[in-house]
Length: 196
Image (cartoon, rainbow, N blue to C red; front, side, top):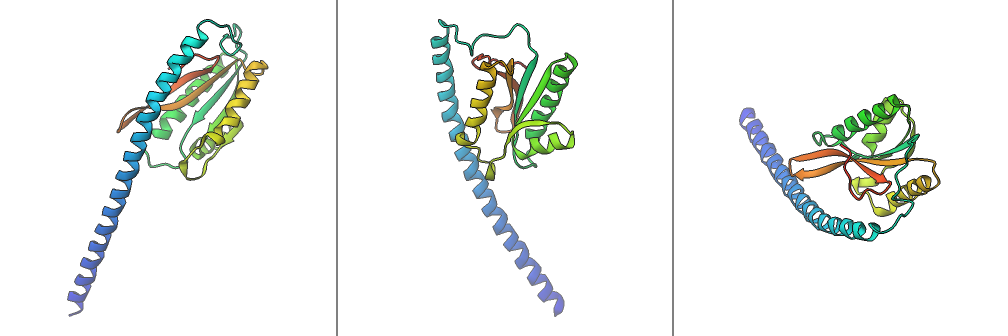
């Protein structure tokens, strides 16, 4: 008799777990669909903005466009997530950050690290690397208000010649199952020029 009650309890527990799992799957699918819609909308906007900026800046010699002949200092800005369990999302960016930093240091260039996300900060702490500035947004929702002050500070540092280059290391979305870590030049403005 006790065995049949035990079996009934286990069946009920399995059924409840199945319901919870199904609900979690539906929520994840909904969030993913919203994120994909935001991505496609922002990509079209970004491409149009880059094209417009290219037309506007092609005729000027603005200080943000002029590359430095002698590069003594480079600021690397890496964008990572706050959580793990996302495949190579964070590890790809951190691997590229490590490689680029080692290249620059080997060439005798001074490097300052700017980090967005908890995983990047944990990487820097583990490697005992100094971080110039960092931003960790709650709930993995980085807002413009969070990163704009860093971008302004980097722009001002470039204009004041405290840094000679600003590079960003971020994941570029290629498909739902694949992101490619890329290193892009931010200052001097290269309008989306990919370094690696």
